[in-house]
Amino acid sequence: MFNLFKRKEDNTPKDVKALRDALLRFIKVELQKSEGGEGRNIKGIHLFFLTNPAEKHIFESVVYATEPMRFKDEVQRIADDFALGLPEDWEMAVSYEDALPMDAIKVPDIDASIFIRTKENTVQKTGSAYIRVLSGEAEQEEYHITSEVTKYNIGREKEVQVKDGFFRHNHIAFPGNSANESNKYISRQHAHIEWSPEHGCFILFGDEGGVPPQNKIKIKQSDNDSLIKLNAIQIGHKLQEGDQIILGDSAVIRFSYNSEALNELNTSG
Image (cartoon, rainbow, N blue to C red; front, side):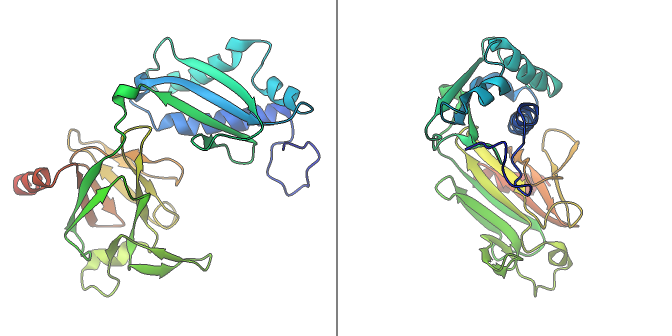
């Protein structure tokens, strides 16, 4: 539970304004995943607070409970800044619970979570796709990925020990002893791909070894020449048909929702 008198090293925001700022920052990060007008599929945002009667007034102050539209307006300004295209009738809901729902996204350092509701007819519950290695040497030339697997790790070597002492399994692995020069610049924990049931697509995230200053990930989409860079592990990129992904300096993989399309793309260059 929230406690204004937690120990100094605790990261929990210590007052109403700090709580509100932290909550809005988290909402901003989640909404950024819907940049480029994708917010039109959002029906509403539901905030859940884990609280008890003695502390409820704190969270009521966070969301301006006596002015129901005020907090929603602040979220709307965030959406406008990123041109999300939220529909005019999107809804903001707030609940105070004894337990946070499992399908909501937990807010770090705050006893709260958010659930972003989307239009059911736009959400694909399951999916599969293919990753083709264009440059660099991986254990396979092509990988079939599905929504049944929580996430697919990408990196140098198949089994690696990371700095916390635990071992990481790279599903898409580039051998470290390869003579291919591109492999040398891929981190052991470079990136991963997750299926998002909320967005109905696969999302690419940079991992600790794959973002600046340690390394880099760049994406070029098939329908334009702009370059997308992943600079933080919290913000991912929704993969689209034909996306090319550069890992490190020169290793390149291509994403497609069907294997035949990959063959056509490779033939056309």
